[in-house]
Length: 108
Image 1 (tube, one colour):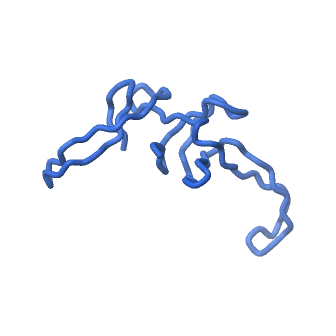
Image 2: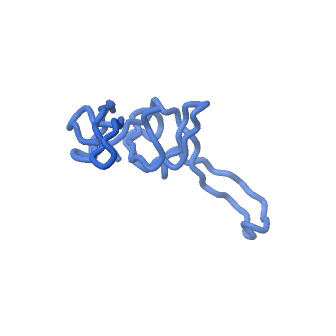
Image 3: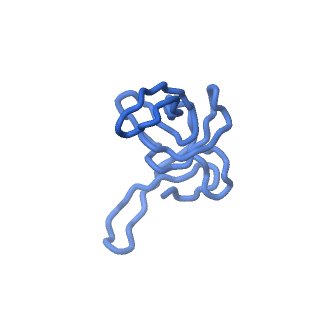
């Protein structure tokens, strides 16, 4: 899976198309992600200890990972991701990093 938690992504399909947000959680088995402020659903809740008021709460629902693309850190546009092997300066070991296909910029 090329998308990780805390990546900034853009929704490319579905009702929330065009919105951007940070990945909050990833469900690997279902190939789904929860993106901040995207695919909001309303949930009616009774009053409880955590929420004494109760009422209608809005919560992000998972969307399929194929419907999001990671944002390029340089151009701030949706891009594909590749992998590149680099040699770590400190340890001298080989390390695989994610790279933007558009600008060649390394992703955190």
